[in-house]
Image 1 (cartoon, rainbow, N blue to C red):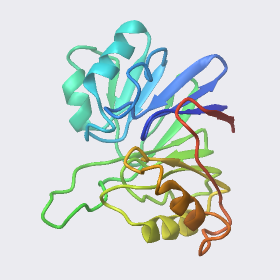
Image 2: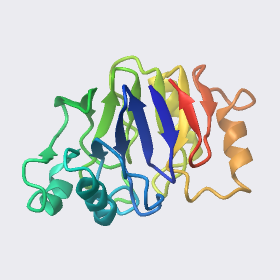
Image 3: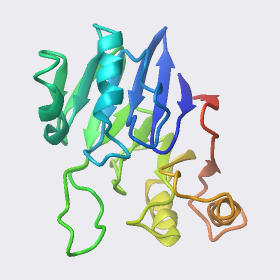
Image 4: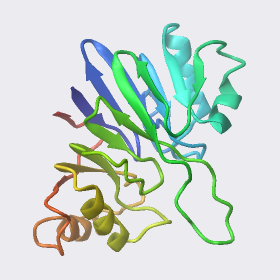
Length: 214
């Protein structure tokens, strides 16, 4: 399986000539979702969900389908009948040849005065987990964790503890559009071998458009 990192929280997975794209939001390249056979969205915040990008992908490929939580599905299902599927924690499905499990229920706490919205994470082919905007522990071994490295709702200590708890073989940064170039070496050091320790996970980050074989 080939993983390509796009801007912010978006990743593209490819195998057997088919592509699955997760979270092509407003901080992501406009064409990131084009060519996808399956689309997954973790929640409704605009840095993860952009209706124009999703519509363009669904219109470009009449066979493409979208799996997401209810708040997003309700905005697109009428325009694409039968192609938009609502999912929640505990669901499992096959999308474009990828086996997907759904884990998690709520977005991480931003502030006690801000109401929490629904957020789901996706475990793909029993190897890669993308948690969206939450530090969800899927309760099973994770080979590759897409780790939300920097967000208004987290601090680096939370990320370190999350990596320790999930204990993936490899952690790759997502949710990084707000992380400046000046701060990146700090995070790399904290999450790398010179930091306080992240349970043995191999930490790395990919530039937008960069790929790795899983």
